Amino acid sequence: MASNQHHGSGGAGRGGAFDRRAPEWADGLKQLYDSVVEEDLPDAFRDLLDKLDGETAPSDNDNERGGTGSRTPRG
Amino acid sequence: MSEDSPRGETRTAGEKSDFKRELTEVVPHLRAFARGLCGRPDMADDLVQETLLKAWAAQDRFEPGTSMRAWTFVILRNAYLTDMRRNRFRGEYDEGVAERILTAPAGQEEPIHLSDLHRALLTLPAERREALLLVGAGGFSYEEAAQICGCAVGTIKSRVGRARAALTEMLASGNIPRRSSDDEIAHSAILEELDMVAAGNGVSSRG
Figure (spheres, each protein chain N blue to C red):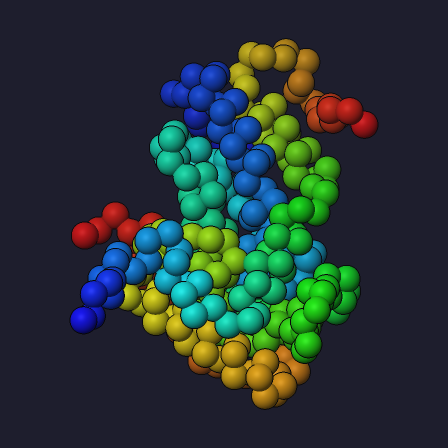
C-alpha cells in the first residue's frame, strides 16, 4: 500500500530540507544575496589584500618599504 | 594594530598565493553575507575589510582544501557580533539597495517586494537572521551552518524554522516593523553566544 513512501531519505541532503516547503519569498532571499555577490568588487578589497601580501612577503620586493607601497594592478 | 613580525612564514609561497587567491574569491560572498547581517552597505564593507585583516593574520590556521567561505564566514560573524556588542549597531535598512533590486518575477500576481523582504529580514534577531542567510541564501547545509555558528545542528534548524515562520507571517500580513527598534531579545541572545564564542572559537572543535 504505502509503497514508495520515502521516509527517512536523508532529510537535509543537499540543502533540500530548506527547499522542501520553501515559501515564495525564499527565492527573493537568494536574489538579495546573489545581487551583492554579482556586484563589481570595489578596488579597496583587492588593494587591501595586495597591501597585506606586500607586508608579509619578506624579500620579494626590496623597495616596498615606505611610501606608496601598493601598486594596483591595472588602474 | 601595529604590524608585528609577519606570520605565515611556515607556508610555502605557493600556499600563500593560493590563500590569497581563495580569499579574494570569497570577498563577494563575504560582502553578501555582511550586507544581509547588518543591512547597510558601508558598514557591511567595513566588516568585510575587518574580516580580511583577521583572516590574513590567521592564515596559518586555515587548512588548505577546506572551505574558505565557511572559514571566513566564521571570522566575519564573530567580528559582527563583537562590533554589535561594542556599538550596538543594529541592522539598518538601506533603501537604495532594496529599491534597485526590486525585481518582480514576470507573471507573478503579487510579487514579493525584495525591499519588504530585506526589511523584514533585518527585524529578525541576529542569530535567526544569520541562520537563515547561511542556509537560505548562502546555500550552506544545516551542518555547515552549525559549524559556522558553533552550535548544534538542531539549533540551526530551529532558528531557520523560526526565521522562516516570522518572515512568512510578516510578508503575508504586510505587517513589517519599520525598523528593528526592539533588539533586546536579539541582543541578549547574542551576548550569550558571544560568551560561547569567547570560550571556544566559533567553529566548534569540541565534540
